[in-house]
Length: 411
Ligand SMILES: Cc1ncc(COP(=O)(O)O)c(C=O)c1O
View 1: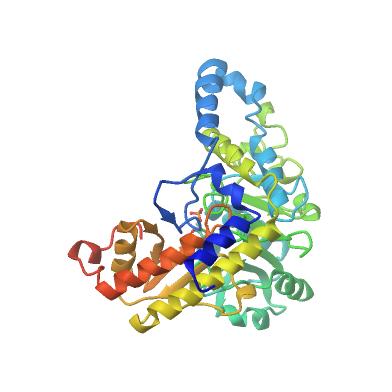
View 2 (view 1 turned 90 degrees about the vertical axis):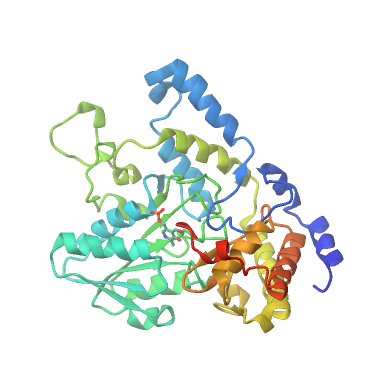
């Protein structure tokens, strides 16, 4: 792709072109951070208003039944299932990724009582590792968390491993693990796998059923546009659902929550993994946000994401390589997720300058600038222009301002 006009041509021919109108995107902004917080889909604000003004204000507590609030997490779970290759009844929207990792890891370890090692990699997102460390500490049964480099995971799956805990797409490098191969290897060695789909769901086709995955977790505030702090989800393969119990015996996972028994008895099926009362306003927002996916083919999303990644990488390397900007992660596009990171001298300040110039990405310590490509609303011309503006900032040292050198709380 050698010209801006060619990018405009690609946008005209894009089979996903009409999807952009389903979102509210500030005029003049090139938003390349949908891998962190997705943009606002049309219809979400209206749905929230209905939930608040009609259902909550007027129907009050009868809404749990009359507006089906109570089973919203399960119904949303079925909608999410379609996006991650899972059958109905295997996904529930609930809690946060962190809490869901704790619940599923706790449950999985009990299925492997003779093994003591949780295997993960150094590219995993810290909260997954922290939750594993916290659970291990809490259990006090001499489990340990073993970390290896991402490329060494396959070899490290041995008969000593109880659970493999992996994020499919690395939040920094974008490296994509081979879910099918690693799950098969884990099963061959008698281990279970928990997949974190934070950077996969809505970013690329996922086939949990086809990979015979045991467990998965994911969030909905990134590529699924559920809003800040939107509910997470979890997946449990059908045959495992009634063989595990969550370590958090919340009443929403009880077989008869409104019997108010004094003793815990887990429900059957995926709702066994719920805990307590869910944030219904956030669930309503997420439910409306998912409407944008109703007719979307994930293979088209993937094809566009890879084409945009290739365009962005080539153009940034060509224009900005001389300023020390270097690609992080695989060069083979098929081994990448849908975001692109580069190491960049003064990366934090460069990103602040870029944001001031209305190209929004983010910064990941120690030295990476990161850009999310979200094919439902990112255009080829955005990708072209973003690289051009990055180049201009580097050429003109536009990042060199004292206020951009000091890091804010959220980077
Ligand atoms: C791979 C991964 N897991 C987990 C999280 C965050 O988990 P939580 O939703 O519990 O904050 C993130 C956040 O970006 C992430 O990238």
